[in-house]
Structures are given as C-alpha cells and as structure tokens.
Image 1 (tube, one colour):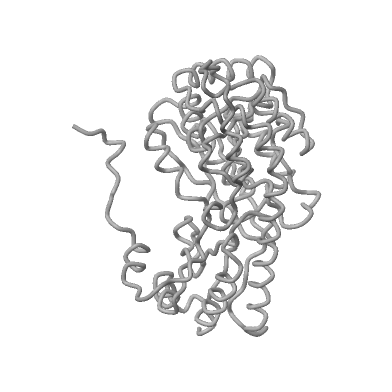
Image 2 (cartoon, rainbow, N blue to C red):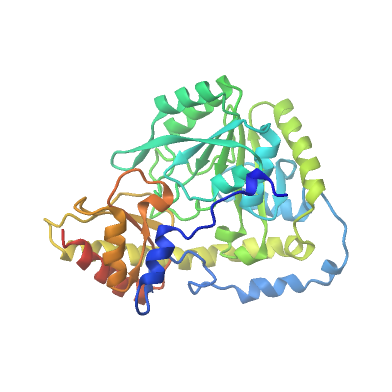
Length: 390
C-alpha cells in the first residue's frame, strides 16, 4: 500500500533512548528554534493583518512587492538581484524538494557536504534522489576537499552540488577560491550549484576577505541560492523562503526560471498575508539579527572562558568557525560518543553528538550558541567539567 520512499526506520534513535533514560530536568544546549530561545517579533506578526490578505490573486513566482523586498535584502549585502530572478517558496526545505525535481530524474545523484544537518536525506528520499557526500577536511577551519569532490562529481554524474554557506554545524563560510573551483567543475560537468545561505547573516565578527559573503551574485555555473525568514527574520512560523536563480548564461537562467515557475504554480504554497508583510518584515530583521549576534558572541565567549579555566593542558577544545549558531567541541577519544553523551546527560546537560550531523571524527559534541545565556553558562560549565575527566 505504501511507497518505498517513505519506508524510513521509525525506531527511536540512540540519542532519544539516552535522553529518555536521563533522570531529572536537563539543561538543553541544543535549542535552535529562535521562537523558543527568546527571540520573538510580535510587531512583525501583527503585519499579517493587512486587509488585502483577504483577496487571493495567485502569482506563481510570488508577489512583485515581496520579490523586490528580497532584492533589497541582497542589495544591502553587495549583490545585484532582479525580481525576475526570485521565486518564493514556503521554506528552504520545500526549495530543496523543488531543486531535486528541477534537476533530477529518479535515481540521479546530488553531492551534499559532510558534515551537515541530517534533513537532506529525508528530502532526497521523497524525490527518489541519491545523495553522495563530499568531504570537508579540517585545517584552521573546515575546507572542501576539491579533488575528492571533482572525482565524486564525475564518477556519479551528479546533477548538482549542494553547499551550506556557512556550514551547519561547522560554521565555515566557503572560501572564494573554493567557490571559483566548484563553479568551474560544476560548469564542466553540466551540474548546478545549490547554495543554502540560511545562516549567512550570522558571521562571528567581520568576515575574512578570502570568504565568499553570498553566492547571489552568481558564478559561471547555474547557481541557485536558497534562504528564508526562518533564520533571516527569526520567524520559522511565517513559512516564507525563496530561491535566487543566478550565474551561467541568460538562456540557462531563463530555462531554469520558466521550469521553476511551473513547479511553483503547481503548489502556490506561500500565503498572501506573509507576502504582503515581507517588506516590513525584512526591514525589521536587522535589529533582530543584531540581538542574535550579541547572544552568539556572549555564549561563544563563555564557552572559550570555560575551556580556558579547564587549563591549558585540557584535552577539550573548540574548533575554529566563521559563523552560524553552533559550536563544535572536540573531546578526548578515551570514550565513544555515546559514552560521552551518557556522562553529559548524567550531569544534567543535553548536547548533540557529532554523528548526529555526520561528523566522521569520534569525540565531537555540538552545542547551540542560541541557547539563553543563563542556561548556556551553567550547562557548558557542567559539560566541560565532565569532558575534562579524560
């Protein structure tokens, strides 16, 4: 009766089992929902009451006023985008599904980064797309293994290469030389670049000159940039995202946009009220983002100070990163990840093990810097005390 594509295992994960066994309340250092982390925008939500929202005039690519507002968002980031390049979606997750439809036949391959957030395999299953991971290697920060990526692209005849920019949870912005190399190889193998920029507004300080700020200006390959209000305006409940079609040549962009318009017309998934409110929502976003960046800065400083107090000979250290909402903490490999997780939960603290994000190296834990400051300070103090017991 049911399709194979939805035949996922529904057994509790090892993480869920360990959390269920934990006794007493937990300090949650995994919180990444801004509406539960103290960041709300009631004045923005009030904008949804525009009386014009009572009339339904569907526009497959989205209302012009909304798409113009998105162009303004990119203009402030130094990228020139026209409304004709923009298509609205209900979310970045929906955008991924549309991209898999646009570029792939059932069974086709898309390259995705590792480590990465664990949602993409489910979205790919729904479209019968095969994912192949291309590796990142750790230097002073994470770097794409370009040689391995090109081999995988050629061997699998991949239809697209996905970038998460900055990485989640690595927090690494793509370097400019990496961006050029990826675009060149994508063009060579007739593949698209799919760039997820949902965290791109959250650099930790001034972005280094060798980092790519945004891909919305395009590359020599067909480039699809995805983002949305979930992170840009801290409003996942409003369900509005977008894609920007850039790069390549005009004929290729036009073909992509015309096909995307048909896909969008089949769904018409973005509600009228949020489209009407989008110019005001994006205008209010910088103030909200500033609050988030301040919390990220403070929690990162607390994490570093706590690690410093553990001593210069402590085996626990934080990995370097450029931005994003997460921090990766490396622990001694005297125990496996689940053993470290059990000990951390016994101290009353919940973190994510690195394998949750497909981190290949053992002894890695992931903490959310979005956590409220008091919870983060107490939780990370407990966690580091446990982790220092090699």
